[in-house]
Amino acid sequence: MTAPHKPQVLPSFDDMVKMAKRDPEAFERFRHEMAKEMIESASEEMQPRLWAQQSHIDRVIHNCKNPNHTNVVLMNELQKQVAKFREALQGEAALAQKADVVSLKTFKDRDGFY
Image (cartoon, rainbow, N blue to C red; front, side):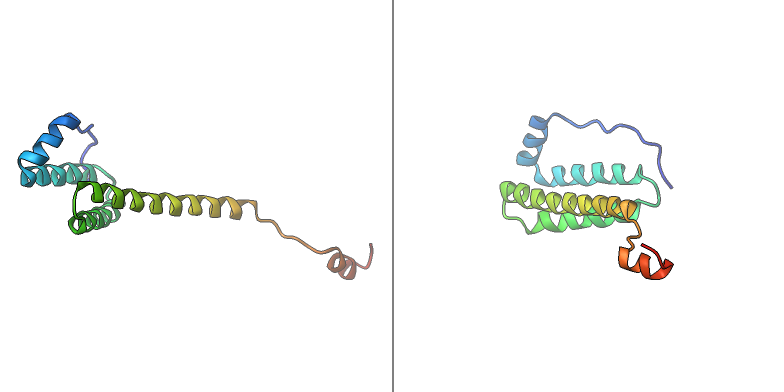
């Protein structure tokens, strides 16, 4: 069931950096809880896709060597998703602009004039 959307309140960036350094396990629990809250506030229709995306993000993070590596890899993943989104939008625009094109020869042969 979709929970009503409420804005998430995050600690300051500096506080999150301190938490990640001081207690990485607590930071991971916090990160997972924030993701869970956000996904559960989405429509039921979107939740499976968001859970799949979150699972992918978690696998990417698990395979990275350090925070800088994680940022670079996640940025690359985001760029791939933006490119797919752009292609989808351009594809829809192309379909909307599609028209039947009839050559003049076909037009002449069919209707007997020109």
